[in-house]
Length: 239
Image 1 (spheres, rainbow, N blue to C red):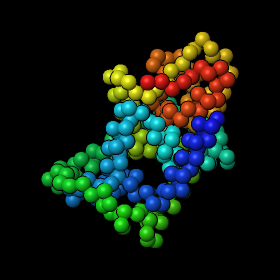
Image 2: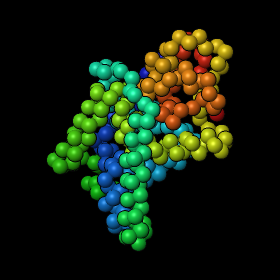
Image 3: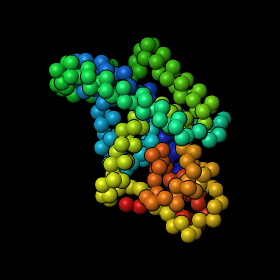
Image 4: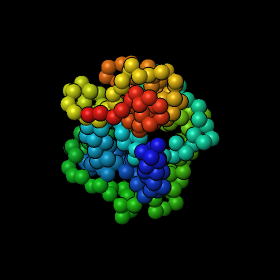
């Protein structure tokens, strides 16, 4: 459990820092930057998440995501499981036209000409004016409503525009089979107690997941809750 205390502390700290880093996760600023041929800070962040996921999958979501920190705080008010399945595809219907539009705008601007990490921020800080705070609290309200009405980490499942970057990276690393962070399981030890399912913040059917080879799910954020809750130590991190 000590590992989970560290993980929860990290994502809570990231949530506290969100007013400072908010615009570096913005889906809107890449549009403005693309129209001027500028790679904005948020596009740099999304690119880094993609590259990192080639080695660590969606571990960012489980260990450092500020919005994930907020959603896990919401579980004290609503701890119901999120309905997955085809509803998880909603984020891809958001991501594909979003990314395509950015690329089209960049082409119309003559391509990306420079990187400006602090583009559209004031001194590199996200929230320094009233308008920015209005946008910030509207976005937090959307996350809050989804978490309370849709279940655990509903925003991650249905809306997050950063998640597909990491899902893509995770799929690539799985296909290419080079050493990377993943889960493995000793299936013979499993007693079907169901604690892994209960603890999973992404509402994944972990009991079924560990029967597959490789042990993976596109919604798994490698948080380790299933590892640390299993009394028989069936699941573990591996490379």
